[in-house]
Length: 180
Image (cartoon, rainbow, N blue to C red):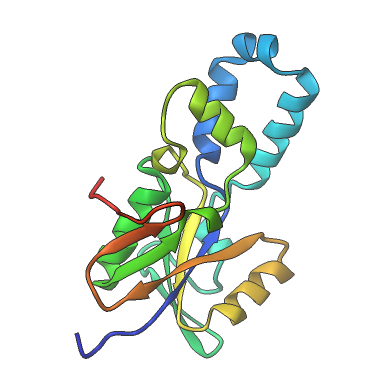
């Protein structure tokens, strides 16, 4: 692995937003018995604001065919989060880059409503549909973060790549990511 490049992993959007919106839609009658209409309305608005439909909004010049884009002085690779959730996207990102990674679960952006709604149907929000969220692996993350924030896009560094092949999630304990 002499060609190893260290990337910071940036997350755009939120974990399980798409799934939480789906649960809101499917179980609205049940949810109004549990939560106030105001809470549900605010949650829906927040969740929708974290779903991006097109990665072209994220990095200038990126296309779906070419997942690598040059931005400022660094290299960036965009990996969409999909139906396998953030954990699935992290696995895919490791495969794309042929590296391991280390991510702190507490740094992964997730709305409290997404946690509660996924809990209601007994599913792990980090393994739930996160379509519309993206991971960006960047050699110079600051420039990309600044560019995204200028566009009004919330984003956060959640981890980094490693030379080893292991994909590790840290938090209250350390665990290895398994293939989705």
